[in-house]
Image (cartoon, rainbow, N blue to C red):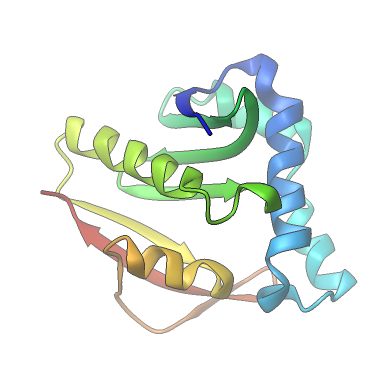
Length: 155
């Protein structure tokens, strides 16, 4: 298995959209419990047009993770915030998510940032804890879902 992290390109938008939507619908059952209304709210801005806008944001750092030549992950940060880190169901527990997160961390350090912050879903909380992120406050609500604020000091 070969993992390659690279900068996301505008031509990746459709594939990135598919990665995100599959990850939410198929991997995040602990968050949405199959509730169509919650999924609809969460997925509302996960469109090809939205992804294209994110990729054109000059303040955003957007990366994709290719596994064996196929794009199966996406990560995005802006400043000290990890905004998105998703992998396809078949890429879970393969190291791709960790590789994406480490690439976002390296970018943050190169920018001179001392801390990275994010809001974790229930599904991803253990992943972020394994990678050194710690809760920084009580859970917050977004899209009718719970998000746990977390941060990690950059060394």
